[in-house]
Image (cartoon, rainbow, N blue to C red):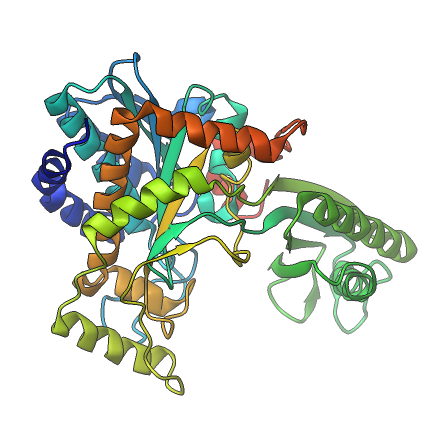
Length: 458
């Protein structure tokens, strides 16, 4: 039987460690695939509480799998993320105070890692006190920000023995979600031409070819794939205007609500790039990164998380917390009124704007997730999100999520019928479709030399 006071007491016993780790991870922001300190801090947290931890799981150096409990009941997986974002460093102050050249937690993964890890520890403590059969499995998932880590772990079979998966993330609402997000595909293209003095020019101009190719594809995108969105950056495009670059690297990403149409758009992108490069005599090399489906909704699992969240209640911000976030919002979005979701809802309509690397996993194992709210006037993937993630006013949201996930994990352990209901819903939704992972193209470089990936020399 579920004993809510026991579960909540177990979580309260680790709350202080969770909050300390929010700050500890924020002070060591690490790029995707390079999260050595962050992974070590979370693994040590788990080991202090009796978990058996395997590091470097699935051939991913900064991943880990931690287990506690017996294998006789449900096996509940909880996902921890902990990577940071390039160029988003900022002090924990309500104004811009950073170089723009160092990593920062502009997506709040310094919260996700400790909150979800702490939830797993609390659930295992409560399960032991209540003598519930089953196992809590906390999976350290690096490199979410390049949508790779969980795909590589899935490819390695890390999620195969799980019955339910729980996770959380900061966004602009408080609540459990059972709705899809976008599928995505990500790839880098290398255009190779000739180096030359800019005044003399060159016939094989890699930079102009890359620019022309991208412009040509956007015409095709508008005409043939209007529901697909595209983002790109030039990772390497020369150092000074007096020297035409020999090599140009273009990193592009496509998003769509469905995997199939998105991959058709990606094939069109490759065809356009190939045609333009062939016409200008510039070499072209595809460096595929990853692709993934969007989330598969699961109302049965989501409703359990929703019910647990309503027991916990919404984030408990103080007046000082609100005042600090208002000051930050005024600096980040000076023309917009301050808005912050202070309630709880269940979200099962629409499609979320982002892609996630556990999208494919949700088509194989029922996945329930919840969000906690930041002010809408604090942009995600922005210096202001980094500033807020390092300040105590950001803690009530992930603390709410952590306690709700802990209670949900204990609920699933005490009610195997709820696990079976979620699994039955997944089977009904998937039907006869065979779910396979699109093999990532960066497994080897991220395992052997992730710095080379970030230095654009892979």
